[in-house]
Length: 327
Image 1 (cartoon, rainbow, N blue to C red):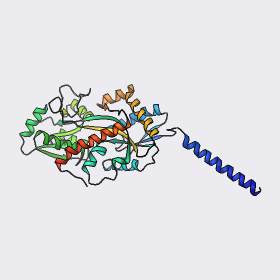
Image 2 (image 1 turned 135 degrees about the vertical axis):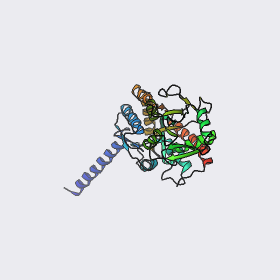
Image 3 (image 1 turned 90 degrees about the vertical axis):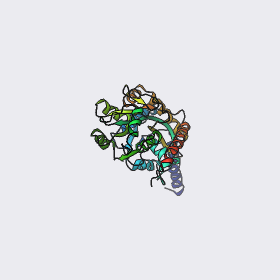
Image 4 (image 1 turned 180 degrees about the vertical axis):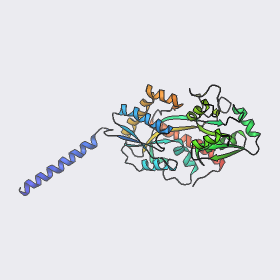
């Protein structure tokens, strides 16, 4: 092969590679599987919710959406993983309010920043509940306040850990309603539930779905819901704090979808559309009702960002008087 022929052959290879590269970059999003990173272990309520969303999003996106569980360190592992992922729309974070609105007000240092992410949309939320062991004669908010105030040494309330939302809610209720709280921290709801049922603690803060299951089994009773609205699975006769005259006392575990900051707007818009469509699907609506979840789709990705900012401000005002800070 002559030098000229070699040159032409090399130029053709380079041109072919450039064209192939351009074709890859020109492919419409999404062209491969999308991963949703969940900050909790497989099998839990959050994981179940995320998988239901992923299944529905796959249908409208025309691409597989899979869930990857990265539990531990209060969501830090999942958050930092996604923050460092390629900004291409293929690695997403199933975030929650603890990660986005509470942690920035609570921790002196975080391994991630909310600005490391681009909001896509809110997904679902479910209210927390105040539950009592069956030896406590408390069935309403008024009775809760009267009972707690009759205990100058304070009432014991089980939480899932120091600095968690359940801990902050318990302290907040005591401050707002004028009674002393002795928070008892557990590593999870299973152990705190055992102690509540056994009568070793007075009350416990828990998510609606698991609380309803145990309430209906007569293992404990729900005193009140911290939801602003009544969900279909809330037992008849159980009031919300809003219905009891305390509309300012509300708290949810809320979840949303976020991507690494810098992800192309085209991908963000398609993902947002897919989330909204998923939350309207009859299958998803039925699953949410069974779990006591409330859909919270954002009108636009920017609106989800505004929601996060508002929640950050609200929780800042709640946490500051407590003087709680975490390293």
